[in-house]
Image (cartoon, rainbow, N blue to C red; front, side, top):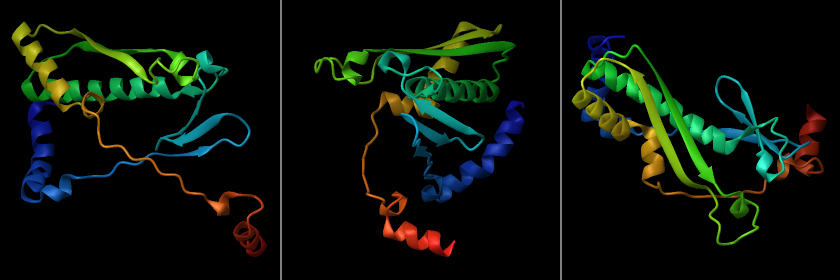
Length: 186
């Protein structure tokens, strides 16, 4: 895709967002179901089913995906797509490139071994290795704009408002009267 094609694709979308700002607010969703045989969660990705489990450093087998790895993978995916879009828009020719992310975790926090140890990533490093002849000032602009427009990077960089809820779903329990009534009819 070239810059003109990208601009023509995005122009009507940008126009709509300028005239109707509320139309730009989209709620993304993720859904998973708890595995009833192991400590795992089956996440619907839209393309396949991803099964996340405990990291080996917390007692997992390593057979399931680690949610920390998935977070880094989401960052790499978003940053890579954003970089390609920005490069296309500003005319930076990329022959090839790689995106990598790594993060440091202290599992003592997650396992409750040390209350002073943080739960979550202490640091995350995102890096790009690009094969290009673009001048340094253009690469600096590419990096600045990629950082600015990468949704996952900005979400991690500026903590969003978070909310957690727990609802008891009696229909999900095998001994639930509501489930028995449904089972009898189905």
